[in-house]
Amino acid sequence: MLNFTIRRLLFTIPTLLFISFVIFFILDAAPSDPTGNLPLTIPPDVREKIRESLGLDQPMIIRYLLWCKQFFVNEPLNLLAQWGINIGDPDRLRVISFQTRSPVVDLIAQRMPQTLWVVGMSYVVGVLIALPIGIISAVKQYSWFDQMGTFISMIGFSVPTFFTGVLMIVIFSVWLGWFPSIYDTTLVVDSWRTLGLQIRQMAMPVFVLALFNAAQISRFMRASMLDNLNQDYVRTARAKGLRERTVLLVHVLRNSLIPVITVIALGVPQVFGGAIITEQVFKVNGLGQLLIIAIQGGDIPTVQTLTFIFAVLIVLFNLIADILYGILDPRIRYD
Amino acid sequence: MTETSMDIQPQRSQWLDVWDQFKTHRGAVIGMLFFITVCLLVLLGPHLWPIDPHTIDIRAKNQGPTLAHPMGTDQLGRDTFAQVLAGGQVSLAVGVVAMLISLFLGSLIGVLAGYFRRIDGLLMRLTDLFLALPLLPLLLVIIMLFRDTLRASFGPNAGIFILIVFVIGITSWMQTARIVRGDVLALKEQEFVLAARSIGTPPHRMILRHVLPNVLSPIMVSATLGIANAIITESALSFLGLGFPSDFPTWGRLLFDSTNFMTLNPERVIWPGLAISLTVLSVNYMGDGLRDALDPRIRGR
Image 1 (tube, rainbow over the protein chains, first blue to last red):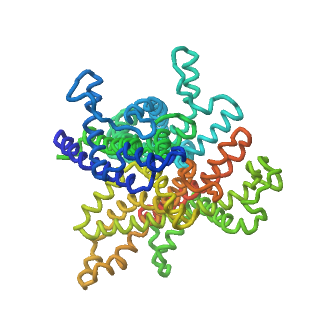
Image 2 (image 1 turned 135 degrees about the horizontal axis):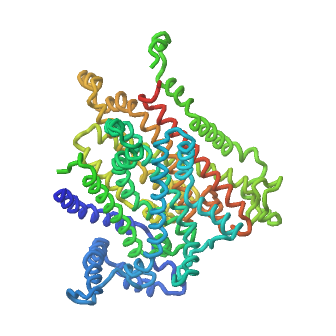
Image 3 (image 1 turned 90 degrees about the vertical axis):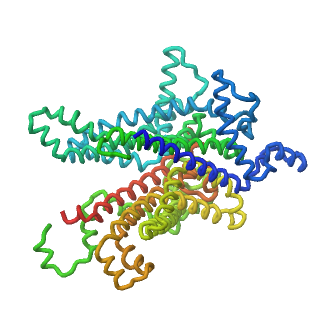
């Protein structure tokens, strides 16, 4: 198992380097101009100077290697320096955003909490809803509960989040006025009242994303339970006189959870991607919104870094899913 | 299995069996009828509905549903119903064309990888790489960056149409390729393939005559799911403001434009959103029914 993990980890390094190169190549091939949003009164030679100061006169491969050095060497060293471990010269060049002229990693650190709170919470809520629904649907197959579950999950992954989100805003913010439609990041939770406000402003985005996630996971849970319910060991467990509850919740559930857990792990990076839209609907200023702003402003370092981080998440959670599968299911041996 | 009745009947085509099984799936039939209705409405509607979607009637702006404007009007007094019909044409066209591109790429790569062992590894690593790319951010980036170039060379509307269809197509073929490859690998071990090879069938005829017809069922299921996926992706892009321009409306763009007037005219948001959701729902149900109907283990039970 350890061998497998190390081999896979080593294999992710060329994969990630290649992905980062692809992203850089796409960004570079595009005719975007980071000085395009500056006032038209700036004369062309000054504009050229600005482009030079951003390092855009260098050949592409040099800029790519510089980005690699900044991202893979300088940023981790900088992180260590913040914890008090200083290696080398402290004045390292960091990945600097074209728009704000501040380090991209700092921007990401500012935006991360909002995204993690909303997206992470919605994924947890989604999983917590999905598992019981999937279990009951499988145990009472073809009952009205199962039919309802099938229908709702079909709606859950057919109706896009930008429509459910907007619909929720129309109903709960415009007509009923229960929840705010704009997420207020400046809110500091220090009392019961502000906690209530925080819960109220998180309710709608979390619910929208949770519905979307629960739809898929509950289907997987149901299918996996149904696979296991027909197995011989279930009949044996019943035959030796175990209570139905023990059979279902101990024997069947534990075995059915194995594939579901890998699905949950695989879904995490997609949730971050999908959250771009939800953040836009509810005006949460998280990572997704940072990406949109950066794309619109032609801010190549920010776009490159953010997209690459999304790619890292995908590769990482694929690896985690594989490893979890190997740990949980003794039938699976990678060596 | 009703073997006796099968013996008596003259030869039944496989597709007749599939259709019989498809008919028993109630959701799939309703979904198909609904999808056909939407297609007809969207294709014929603009010719029958008297109001042009671009007619500006500023005195009738921001109206709720009335007899003259059954879905109300927008901030410039344009008829929402006419716009939804016109937007549907573009949304469905994007869905179908993007699906065809992704299906073509997916089948091609799947068949090649499954059939020719030598390039299997390479093509599957390519598939894995595409699966590891963060697609939505990359779609946004590509569209934002190449929009103006393509607009300049193909005209404002055709350029963005080509771009969106193309990027959705090349970022959604991976699942099809994987499924098709698996089926081709299993197919290659069967006797009829060996028989065909023994009489000297060249590879290209082998693929076209023997392999492709037998992997048609997974391709058809991917086709329905592909339409649904393409419609959702296109509306998501338009919703983020990076799809079609306002004067060339699609359902996603209409939804995006109407969110700005949510407090003034909340009903307006519902129509394009409902159109997207119901169309995708019906296509998904169709895909569900088709998958059951094409599965020989379920069929005939």
